[in-house]
Amino acid sequence: MHLEAIATELLAALDESSTLDAITARDSGFDSDAAYLVGAEILRRRRARGERPIGRKIGFTNRGIWAEYGVSAPMWAHVYDTTVTYLDEPVGCLVSGHLVQPRLEPEIVLHFATTPSPTATEQEVLSNVDWVAHGYEIVQSHFPNWKFKLPDSIAAFGLHGALVVGPRRRVADLGDVARKLRTFTITLTNDDDVTATGAGKNVLGSPIAAAMHLLQVLKDQHQFEPVHAGEIVTTGTLLSPPPIAGGETWRTEVSGIELPGLCLHVE
Image 1 (tube, rainbow, N blue to C red):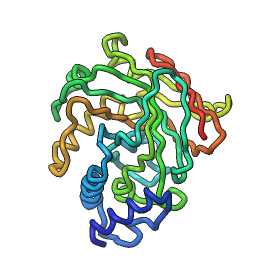
Image 2: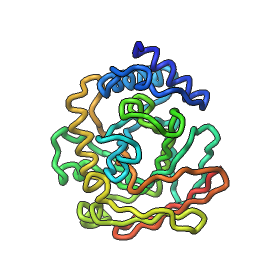
Image 3: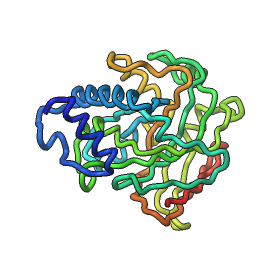
């Protein structure tokens, strides 16, 4: 299939909240390099229709879910001003009717006050970050029953549907942030029933390590701009993401770092 035709098909599925057959099932030669070219075309079109990219999402940084989704590497995609919501308090609502087979991913979000080097170390990355937040990325699959291969997920917006960013905390106020991001733990409940537990170490060792991976990948992807000052990066799910539905209330409890848990009501 022509890459522009794939971009057209995926954007139609996004706008119509519909599903389609996996691209790799129809084109055995469709690989990750081709998928990122589709992503670049989708970025161009979304910008042209007025959406503004404000950061990146990294997916599949949690190796513990690779087998479940049939993948063996992380991937990334853009997030937009139309898909990101900021909360000043640790409670909010998610309108979910436009999302296709949505699942909930508790994550750590980083905000870059200054532009990081593609080869930055952990401490150098932290020196570029002015605030950290706990958030929910709501992923969606335009492929039936979440059946796809890695290139499909890259092309289909990195599975990104929405991002809810909780209250922001200044790095300067969090003490030994590098250690805390590696060692903190998190519990997710649905209507007070524990659904899953996770930890900062689950995303390539820590959210900072996940960000470092993205910076290194972008160094070789010349069709995209590197991460620059003012962008957010959400670093991947800390636990196995459950499906969500209207009427549910999801809560997290975070231990080991001074970030509030989030309460999210799904509408």
